[in-house]
Amino acid sequence: MYRKLFSVFFIVLLVVIGCSKGNASIEEGPIKVGIRSSELRTWEYLEERAKEEGLDIELVHFSSTYDPNEALLDGEIDVNAFQHVAFLDTFNEKTASDIVPIGTTIIAPLGIYSSKYESIEEIPEGSQIAIPNDSSNWGRALLLLQEAGLITVKDDFDGLGGEDKVKDNPKKLELIPMDSFNTPRAMEDTGVSVIGNGIAVEAGLTLKDALLHESETAKPYINIIAAKSEHKENEKLKQIVALYQTDETKKFIEETYDGNYIPTFITLEELSTYKETYSRK
Image (cartoon, rainbow, N blue to C red; front, top):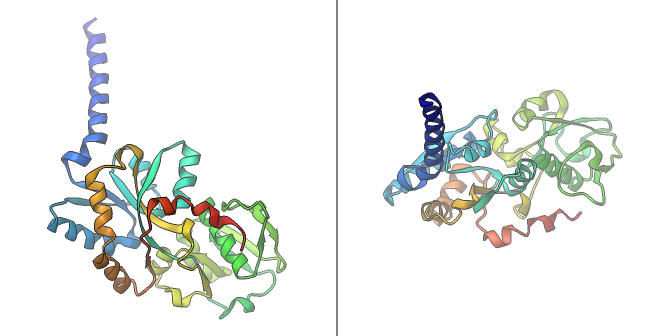
């Protein structure tokens, strides 16, 4: 009898502790911000700026092997800043989650890079092209290849990638999906890679090296600060967004990343219309 009561008490205690850990951190402790290395310098800068305003930020670094969205759902962090809005929407749809953007940050333009060719026109028939394999960036790569005149996507294209999304491929190009972090290294074998800008910067590439890159109007690919929906009105999180979207932070990003990241501060209402930009060009 006592053993059963103790077991029930222990289980309840674990649940209470777990709930407290996931819900109390925003109000009682430092704001834990999940990031990846591509924007580390920006967030280290913001960490210092936040101290000046009496706000305590703790940066939590994630490698490519662990999704910061999962960490957010598990209560390990309070917000994350590593993804664009189309990527987040795909994650929410696949996992039935309710993570929401609470502010916009930058665009890190996707580019077509080559170790062999100096222009799009030089890419020969039958070439291999490495592309990101997650569905949102795969779709993003297809749109960029279409803009380059290399392929045409299907008429009902929904912005997501897949082998069945290409309508015309006149040069019979071989598109090779792979983990985004491997696309720079793969360029040595394929000759051509579609690389996300944050990953390109880490690999020592700049937008100036790209044969072609997205423009700053690529609304689906605006990066965001994201939180659980129940925390979207939290004043501390709003303070972090406001701190990011200052002229001082904008200047820091432009100077630190030499124009490779484009600060893009738009309203959440405007951001919500991004799916309209999936229409074919």
